[in-house]
Image (cartoon, rainbow, N blue to C red; front, side, top):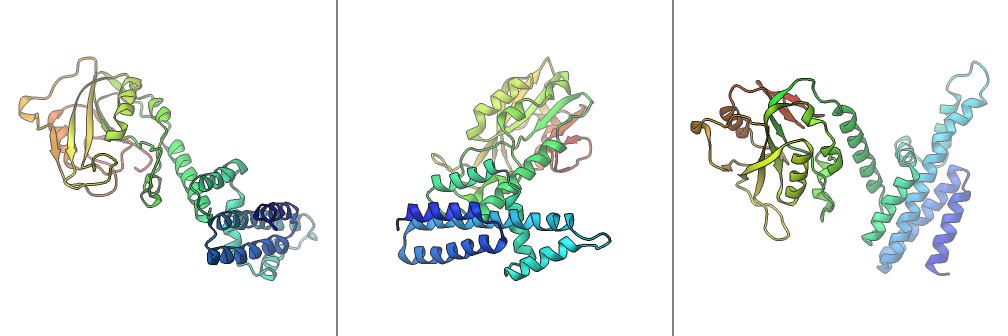
Length: 321
């Protein structure tokens, strides 16, 4: 029997599976096939078997999530927790722990389009899909929702200095261990541009905007969308070399833009355009920059967008404060 026929047969069996035992039997068979594929070093077989295993787990989650609800619909009046007891016993009979069932229910709650997208991404990279891939996607979506829910409304005040470190989203990460989404929730460029920053900017104001080298063009677009005009930039020397396809990156850019005719800093507080401060946590900007800006604009109304911490003398806006 060809692998394609086996794959199609497994998909069909899962669609017909009406009980946890039936779905778990397919999952157990896929685990045995996965071992066989690894022994044969058959990567194609490993990939489709991993997919079937994941689909079986999702089907178990769908059935498990409905057990308690269905049982409670038919429980005798005055009998509490019948559905929960029935579910617990059914899972026990199938050899599934409560935590494993909960994990399957979690991936069963993912919309079908999202579920299929995760599988397609693994296929495009020619590797087996895992439940961790799905859980990572759920985590990202939750973070993005938290970001949108917690950062939609800007303050009502008006500011002469705006300092921003947008959570840029990158299209490609060679190593998932370095995936930026694992560090903090990112935003699409259009969502950053659509923020009504112009509404909180004084008619004469200055914007300091962080941008990495690959995001320089996006930085200019954000500046324009927020109603500012680019003027110059400074370079942050991180004193630590990183990754890069052409140059191994050791710096980030602090773009300066203005709106109207803001005052320029006193000559005594115009520092070097090369800010050499040691980097610390992932994406966290050096605290020394606050002091630089405070010296340049000591008597202005200041706000930090996408802030991680509160700071005396600053208004802050962001989902991490």
